Image (tube, rainbow, N blue to C red; front, top):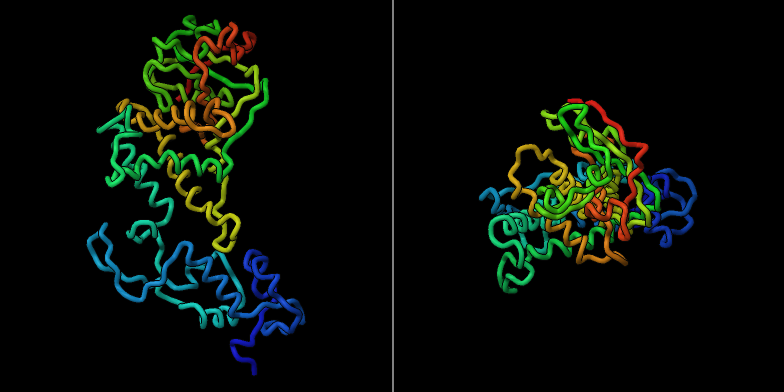
Length: 373
């Protein structure tokens, strides 16, 4: 009878392509201890070590009580290996039992619950640092925060949030090139049908003197807010007061490079055993939380709540380089689940006829619609 150290399993019995691909170079032809077929097999010890390596990227083994300063209590995890691996990894029951002889089957807790400096989950770290950053730029310092802290200060880490987000942009490949002649839709609400707007000057980004504070731009800074279709524009500009909206189609004259936050919504969290991509899990989790924040409804909230995303926008507009500076940001619509919004870094003058024109309005597309609720 085979000992546990002699047992080997084949690809079919392992039933996880990442684990098998990571270990296939160590395999050899032999009889599988579980299905008795002669195939390329891997030792149980190697399989268990690979699984444990993946698990420890998000979990820690805990055999004693640990202190949680968030709650002020001592707790102990009772989470089992079968719960952790459910939906991520599956294999034969007899193989799983053998794997548990190498890996402690119980006593694992998520790193998110750990409050010890750099051992925390990356998304947990930066969600907290983003909150620190938001508080600081809203209530403490807004224009000189890059040089405001000493290295020894606890809040010094908050300024690294922009660097972290930059790294996440590159890691998740969120840059998107837009070819010339792409359609962007922009509209303005008005109360009476006869009060419709008609010219590119009226329907383009507002002049600086009329630019109000918004998600991505401070008061007095003009940028072009648009959407990918008419339905999204109508949903976004509905205010419960005006009854009509005039919408026009704009097209870009030149190629654009945009930061596409909407990409993150379709990203699936990588497997714990996907060595190539599992370090993206924290970035994806952070950005999904971040997108929920910036796309939350903005009706009747104080303008000060816009400050953090306004600073982030200016960082991507003027400081960050992805080969070259970004021309704008794509983000999911807060009013239309299937819509996309655009914050393009073009002011009023760049949307009308002139030497620096970047967007061209198609006069034939100007149309007045009744707003809906």
